[in-house]
Length: 491
Ligand code: LFR
Image (spheres, helix red, strand yellow):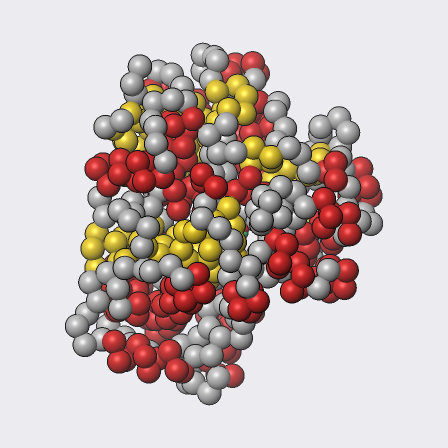
């Protein structure tokens, strides 16, 4: 057949979704069939992912997809990066994956850097220093009984694919976020692994997006009511890799903001940029679909807003997003500004209080209302996008003529307009579901109904998905130039 029915499992920091798609050379329809919460759970002081609940949510979603569509021709999984489960010698999971926002990881940063200094680490792995990169998590786990029993480390989408198929592997785009992949050879760095005293056997063979991983196990078919065989296909299993594949770019002269809980801001390259200037500016070289490099920065993103909403809801205040954004749009611009990447914002907790403290410490009167807090967040994010887009272009030499803003943030009209103003560039907002779209495009090509490279896949996106154009407000440039001078990011 020239069209396939595919399921994309897309797991985010606060919810997971199973999306169903019909995909063919002239067709790309996607709809959500099941959404389930992803609630981090703290036990004995450690923040975990409830990975069994995620697996159950995936089974529910596959069952619903089968009911809606009659059958499934393929399944692909993407999720956030860096976090992983450890398997024992029998293939059983040893404890729940620890959440990247848990504080324990950063305790291992000095330990790792004492063995491999940060400059040297970057020359090998090309990764932005984030205290929760897998390399630090594994170092923090060393010495525990659990770690001693571990024989295999599987990143979250690889773990879930293992439970669906029985096949063990490490999808390469997500493997590139561990800190243990060599950015130049694109293989596990045996040398780094050895120097850090880890066992090479922990890291399974790499898989490329588009490769067939296996088929749904018999017990999975029985539980979901699906009729086999149903192939599970490797996609850009790092959600950001799938989202960038899902950017409807017409040329290579684009930057992207993949805007969800995090905002990942950068450009797409053919080769890594491993310069010291890039390291100092916090740029990462993660791998994308088809051997591309995602040269980007992690900006703290809508987490600032989501965590504020959670704080307000707990205090009995309104957390309604349309209401808060409308109120923020009436607050004068640049009333207060923070560096969104300030490390104090990383852990869960009272976000408005931390924003107020950051304002006070930088000599600004803190926000006096929810609206002012939200405005502070949106202005500060737009400024961070501007810095990151410009730095990415400078550091990589890539021309940027348009900024594609994809993911949930594309619905936030205030953020989209301010991003256009801040960057002084047109912003094309959408698709909201870029990650799920990138996921099914790569599956469909792997299964043979689409052909070509990213340009051809993106052409199908442009023919089938809407995007909203935001142009910079005439005369807004100088105010953003002045605002940029007010904030000096720490990193
Ligand atoms: C976005 C994302 C980022 C990664 C962060 C933590 O969902 O995958 O790319 O740095 O989550 O894993």
